[in-house]
Length: 425
Image (cartoon, rainbow, N blue to C red; front, side):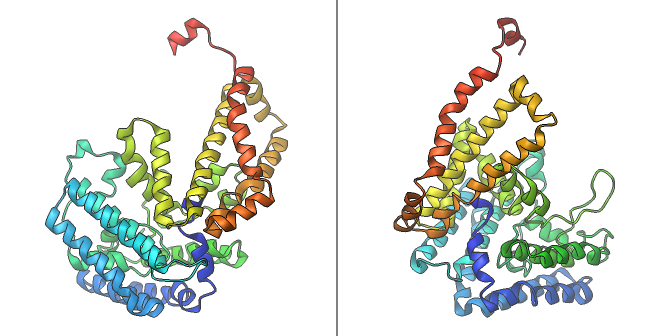
């Protein structure tokens, strides 16, 4: 659950930091308007320069001379692309360097509180630069060797230094996300990210009306933060996502939260799928799916969560949190499979009793939704251990018992297949 947050507590804490809040809302929107009104038809060089220096200004405004960390990592990433080319060595070198730099930053700046430091936007930049290396590598493959997803982000040409800077410091995504690809950024600069090709997006005010409405409702501070940055991306054009099957223009390319799904889903996986969508997509594309060679989805999921735990920081709480997520998600999948394969349970789930079932699901969902967040928020074992001890590790016990009992319930509720049926399967 927490990997979808992309340091959600840091974002939550950021709203108490005037500089960062000003950068996300009152400053981000004017930058997008300047681009839309005065620079939309300018050359790519001018647009890259604007995005680079506006982003650098925001970074300097918030973190002063510590902006040197992001500058260094961007330059080194560009050199890795140019010197190593489209090679596995480049991908591995990029991954190792960017992750070690981020973890060293965590190590030297770590405290027991969520402080707003240069490592907060740097964790966003780390994924962006690793993703850049992977997309550049994919661009060297034959079309037949790429998945449909890789074709959407693969880079066919080597980006310039100025292009990488503009991509890295784009004001709509540098501080708190969302994640987007260099190819999407290139389409923005070439004026393709619009419902009216070659012209600024025409439906900005309608789209941001919904954004403003959700912000006013103020569901949660971190969701408001993401909705605001999504508005900046829509205003600039980066939020354009082409047309759907009905021919309607879509503006959700930078959507980081599905508010309705988040509020109504009775499932833990539903919450995951509705939250920090672009980081989810990045992790699925660049980590989980590339671990396919392991030949085991559980192993791929385990290593993906391990990567996310390390990416968030070096505290023990992150490892505990993502370990719990692994258990909870797999228990839920077992329960869903049981209901789907059992004629009795499936009929109950689809009957007039479903509202009652939904209420029970929601009670369990919200009762244990915050359980894995305890170590994520408290960092060190001496703090989260006290909390879990005070509630007798009820979440651990509940999901461990469920994990052990579900296989036996499956034997009871799921009819055994006959030999002929097995052969047909």
